[in-house]
Amino acid sequence: MTEKGRAPAARAVLQQCLRASLQVKPAEEHSEAQSVQIDRGMVIYVCFFKGATDVILPKMVSTLLNLRLCESDSGKMVSVLELPGSLLIVPQATLGGKAKGRAMQYHDNISKEDGLRLYAAFVSLCEKELTAAASAEVTVKHGTYGNRQVLKLDTNGPYTHLMDF
Amino acid sequence: MTEKGRAPAARAVLQQCLRASLQVKPAEEHSEAQSVQIDRGMVIYVCFFKGATDVILPKMVSTLLNLRLCESDSGKMVSVLELPGSLLIVPQATLGGKAKGRAMQYHDNISKEDGLRLYAAFVSLCEKELTAAASAEVTVKHGTYGNRQVLKLDTNGPYTHLMDF
Image (tube, rainbow over all chains, first blue to last red; front, side, top):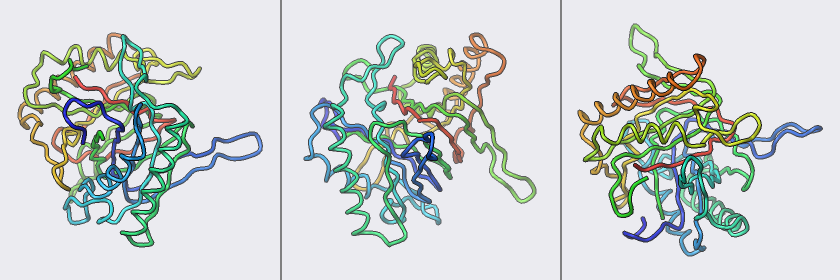
């Protein structure tokens, strides 16, 4: 969580899902579109702001994977690691938008180069934590940074949460 | 947008969709589950905080419906009124969550009674604005306050935005 008054370094929106798929490569003349898919688990939409560094990543990943944001079969709130569930990580620069008149501006967002690096490190850390803690049946899938995120989502109640870091 | 330092009275998360459906009545012994559905448009997840009153609603609805949060067929960012698109409004109390340890707490959320009243007024105002501005082909659908929000979402890129009011 951000300290009072400090601008956030990263923002995540979390939704639990029964199934989610994300296009990672659009269709081209001689190739079909490619997608990744998870079954039950959590979709993490993530956006990094100017000034974000690798320092925030361990706490960010630990928080997102250990907070009780998912509902178990018995109706109890548990973490995605406890569920255990899979992760679909979606880069989502629009989360950094601020309204100016009728337009959205994204001036606080990190540069594309730094964002790509942090996003890759974030995904890698999620993979490490999930592999260490959960069963072999769960997995981490993720979108391609900078691409259109064509998403399909099927939930039993998304329980949408917002977390600033 | 909230003024600097003031706690928000309401929070909305916006996602554009190609199609979205939401269960409004769960299946029972002698009846099937009932759902509402929209085609192209915007999903509005909404949460009201303690202290929220009707005073915020006109600006909130006007902002959400007129901000350029949707992509037109030509790739230009336009408002949901300009698209024109339909609205699916989802009550989402989890958006008011704050982490304490590994648990989420919702102490800033409005009471259920006041929340229900504001939610109904918010939906009604959205219907009024959409009807006044857009064609007959678009519509406002919404979830039932206090129920599980079983949602299915199909996007061409959700462009997830966050707005505090």
